[in-house]
Amino acid sequence: MLNLTYSFSAELWATEGKGAWHFFTVPLTPSQDIKSFLNPNRTGWGAVRVRVTIGSTTWETSIFPDSRTGQFILPVKKMYVKRNTSKPAKVSRCNLKSLYKFCAFYPGGN
Image (cartoon, rainbow, N blue to C red; front, side, top):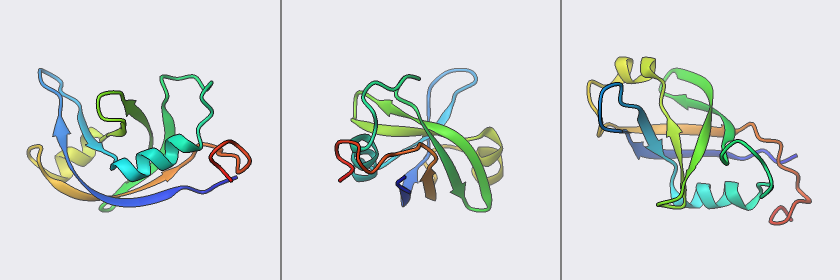
């Protein structure tokens, strides 16, 4: 099994409206790497389970493909947003480790 781990800086952004969600966009290169090892027949809207660390906060969640950009988006826990920023546009260092069971023999995995 492959261990895909990435570290990157990203800007926090939010959807519009009441109860807006906050996200980081996973950069293009890690997004392409992750996609190259995914089974195209998997279910769950293309979500990939990950463990995320930002600052001193770690949690498990899923990243989701964004068809507009070809990248993944990372939902950010409300507790992280409240602890670390009062508004979007905060750049943070993200450490992301895939919990998806990639197989080295899968196409793209050689």
